[in-house]
Image (cartoon, rainbow, N blue to C red; front, side, top):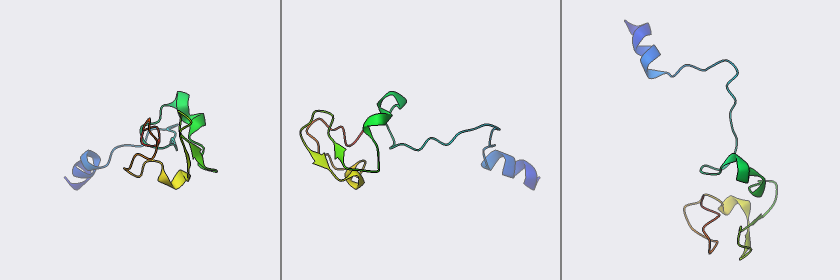
Amino acid sequence: MLPLVMMLLVPPVLPGAVEVTRPRGVSLSNLHFYEPSGPFTCLDGSATISFSWVNDDYCDCRDGSDEP
């Protein structure tokens, strides 16, 4: 019974599954704008901020691009 319960609670890992490392909410087509190795420039050009401020639940960019 316990193995059945564990199968229901733990999702299976599919062979060949790839972990995507990007900020939550960023589409693959916009990934190149969100490079964590340097500062982040708002997509409208209104500001340049520390990448640690991206997805921190506070809009630092006028266009909201730091909170995708």
